[in-house]
Each structure stands twice: as C-alpha cells, then as structure tokens.
Length: 86
Image 1 (cartoon, helix red, strand yellow):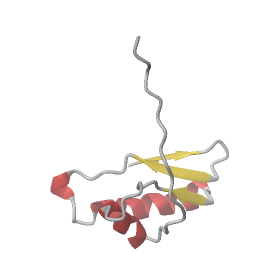
Image 2 (cartoon, one colour):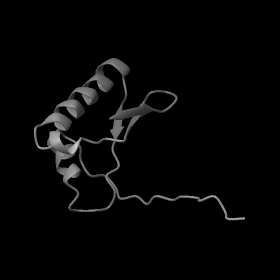
Image 3 (cartoon, rainbow, N blue to C red):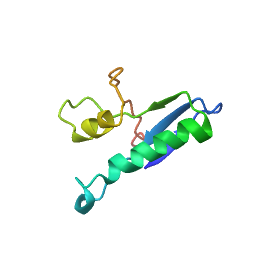
Image 4 (cartoon, rainbow, N blue to C red):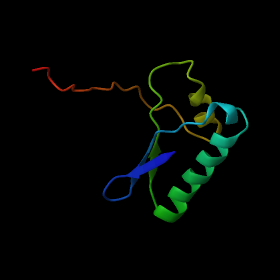
C-alpha cells in the first residue's frame, strides 16, 4: 500500500493497494487502510484522500474502501503513452 501526497500535503493518493491472495478476506487490507488513512489525516494533515478503483462496478476492492468510509465521487479515465516503434 503506497500513499503519495501533493506538494502541499493537502491531498493523498493511494497507489498499489494489494493483498497477497493467501491473506485476502482476513481484514488485512481493511485494517491497514483504516490505519494509514487515519494517520494521514492526524499526522500529515491531509484534507482529502483518493483511491482510484477503476470503472468496474463489481470490483471487490470498492467494497473494502467503502467499508472504512470512502465514497464514490467520480468516474475517471486513464490515459497512457507508449514508446513509439522505430
């Protein structure tokens, strides 16, 4: 679980949130997410935390995030640029 902040530390963005398959459905991610989120608000002083789950309504991670208070606020699109072939 990685948490990155903007230059002013007002917004935190989670990246690479994952649980090894043998440890899933044991509350590991929920516990870590809750702890890290609380720490970001209390110790870092962020005003908002963001997690991008993608557009899949059936993504099980979405339920984990919602269980600790995260709410859907928008849908976004990802853009990539691949190295051109020569």
